Image (tube, rainbow, N blue to C red; front, side, top):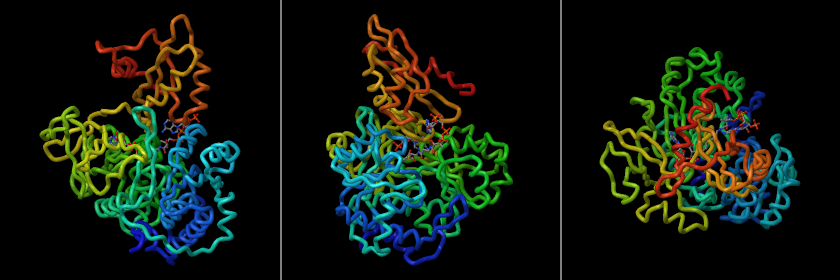
Length: 506
Ligand code: MCA
Ligand code: AMP
């Protein structure tokens, strides 16, 4: 093996005319055709001057070509940095600068906007549209369809995924070949994926769930994916009969359940439904079983660790729990202040160690030391317990984080933008329960003495700086923020007081 991740995920399919991606229009892309495309892209990247270990950033719509960029990066030993399509130019500028990416690939429609971003960061800009066209395709058409795989080791970096922090500064989580490969191998075994499976894939491919869980698992198992550009109810219902398995965030499940066409008959043949990225309400779990007879398998992961725990395939899949640590993953519950391990049943912070745990944050040794202990345990920031049957239950978060429709949002980032607006003294952003997104963002603003901040202008500032999914659904002016005796803002009081804001239809 010269490049374990490439050889296991991609190289094994070399020359095989087996189906890899089934597109909504019915076209099928074979493994061989996909690999030829990836090889051409790998040549382009080398010609553009990227060397093993260099970073390549990609912000494009989901497409087979976008996935082939991932394969090409792995084959050429380049570190792959996928970016949420919702990010604004100002958010992107940070990622490209911070990572030192040598190449940025964007949608042709954004090229004008992003050229200055690329230029300022010293990155080369290429384009790739949702239909596969653009400057990358033009260059690739002139490149050979074979590429000599670059040798890499398990400890070499394969990908950077940026994850925001409680301080508001995003951190590049460095993931190695071993992190990704070991996790995918474990999941294939645990969830019994084989080449006979067909995965209904509607997740974005710029985050762990859609890329490293769904895609890597299917590449290892060898079966095809029905590759939808995004979650679309009509498409999900139409494609379900052809699938054997689906992976989704809880919003996928609540939206399916809200549709009368989603019946037990439609999914009787299905083998597996997996949920993760955000808590699945026990109520959704029960409703799903009542409707379909299937028990959703819930698992728990993070960008920094890939997957940590899973409910069992054969044993009881218990609602409201995330199951047991994966084989090879050690999990303990510790006292947040002392770090001492707590007995089962006690609530504390969840720490994990294993081959899945990342190498650290790019160029942030201090942040890395704060969260990744010298003995290899990573402090997840989630609060939980291990119950009397060994199942992990997540009961809260020790970090100020909102999860909306499976996307993570750090309030600090939004508060920084709000605080910068004229007439604002301070702000507090919280997540409130939402029937569709699980949680949604609401901003509370206090006016500076004698001033009255302009909410419309604040909305515009938010739109300019932050991705749509981070925008507060409501902005509310308060005379003051609730504080404890130490002067600390009591966000839990805001969450309690406004808990029912989205209880009805949005
Ligand atoms: C879209 N919008 C959102 C979200 N998605 N707002 C808040 N939260 C969101 N998640 C915006 C849209 O831009 C739109 O704005 C409006 O909300 C309504 O859009 P809608 O059409 O209803 O949304 P959608 O396009 O159907 O998307 C909803 C979605 C999508 C299908 C739930 O967000 C999604 O695919 N989420 C999955 C995220 C994911 O993959 N997470 C995994 C991260 P406007 O009205 O202005 O047009 S990996 C992870 O967390 C760890 C490692 C793990 O354990 O997996
Ligand atoms: P990310 O920053 O995208 O890596 O999100 C990781 C966070 O998502 C975790 O730290 C948890 O807070 C949350 N998460 C992921 N899966 C689950 C789950 N099944 N139940 C509850 N929270 C989850």
